[in-house]
Image 1 (spheres, rainbow, N blue to C red):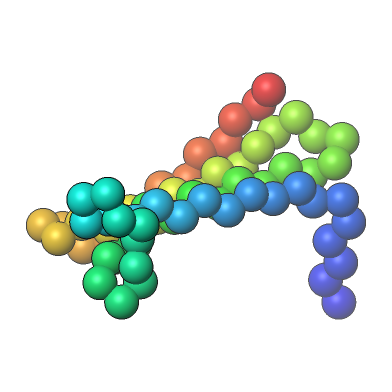
Image 2: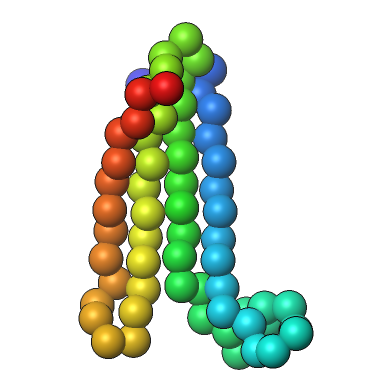
Length: 67
């Protein structure tokens, strides 16, 4: 059994758009996804960044930050 108590999280998605238009998932690809997690009572923030590029395969980066 896996139990998670008091985890703060954040999700950010960035997509390219055409001109002044808002991103449309039918036409505009997602380029970056950022996930951040922090346990209650812990100052460390765990960040995962997923990048996608036309010239390279998708890449994943992980960071840990202490505030």
